[in-house]
Length: 464
Image (cartoon, rainbow, N blue to C red; front, side, top):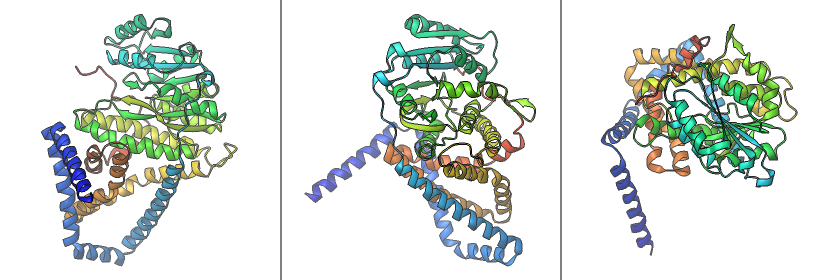
């Protein structure tokens, strides 16, 4: 019997591998294969270069600067290790809120701002209209932010199909996503506002799952949805980003939610208590940074202001939205620069209240999240300086140790994704880590240096 099960399990594994190879394109197989060759080769190099690493560390210990660096880096590693164990504990404690009954659901206005989205906005609106949510309690509001393509045509097509369920509005000129959302907040009639990006689609139970924490927790001011990648069928970057999103949302935001301090409710899917939004709407619209009106990171900014007023911000793992992400390097780094600048700005804003008595219950978790994120930002320049020094002084040691580090530290997101979803797709985490380590390491330092700049960077006509 044991032999039979062993043969059966081996057969299942073989079929999975065969199905993966059959569905994978040659370029994808090459990239994954190259990833593993690099990491296995680096592990071998680390093994045979042990004496060189020992000499390097001994030399560092003999100089005051090197010794201070090793002590500091060791302390930083201990802090991050303890922080990881702390987050792991809170991840296992996290549970999504189950959907409340129809009669308990509040009235809800779903706001969909759109700019140069083409037919995708129609798919977004139709997926929302098919939601398992009482129709008499649901208002859909689509706002065309002065698009230059046929977005308005597809919004009108959706209006014709959905009738009074959908309210539409076209801004005479492009003013930015914040202005489109502001119009929706002022025109919406629901007790709860839900924002959905126009390049996203949702599951049927997404809306009811998303708003349920606002019903069960009177202190909750906002809820973040669970974002997955929509366009991950062929392009490699979306495959990598999907694994990254799962860790970012289903692990990181689960932890933050258990601490009642989700730092960012994503624009792709988020719910807000009407009173919480109206309480900070003027401040949000008039927000400035270094004398200029803020026009990026509106989701992080709104979340920050809601947290500052003492509300809980939670995450619903069972509320899914699938959104489009960049398929090329240029689009990817522009998106990350926008996120990076917003992250720096809002961390500065958070520093002004996080150590005050900003809410009634425990503030320890919120403060620890802030400290961890601040350390990451502040260490970006020293880390880059050390990396460049290591590259030019000991290139082989740098490459081998860095790639071996990728192999070690990326194994956690690989296992996490594999347990939650799919084993074969989880391996893209390794490729993404190599891409980020060698191709996107400059994002945070650059974002800090250009933090005063605004602009979406990625807005424009969709490619045909």
